Image (cartoon, rainbow, N blue to C red):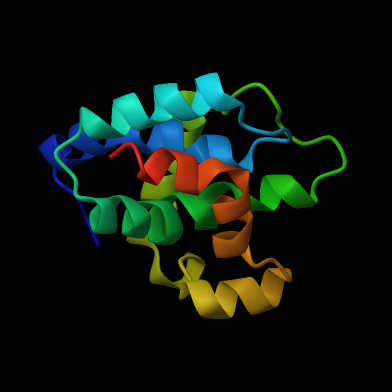
Length: 124
């Protein structure tokens, strides 16, 4: 899927905060509040945010959880945006999440939910 520049610009802040689920650490209450605020400032519904999280952000960054020395502070925004766009524009690099989960051995929807998703989604 190729996005317009306007669509990308609208997604950028959402991609940034959703990528935090795959940092090498845990989200505290302040993090959850900040993420919820950013997501509330977007035009996306809860369902759309979940799809962006699973279908766009996860394939680009969830491998960080498998790294011995994973990123823990924040992903470089430019790198993150390009990784998401590249995977989204290249079907061979952008696998169906269920296939991707099996290949990587991760159940990232479960990871997201135990990492603060419920705290955040309840604030949307």
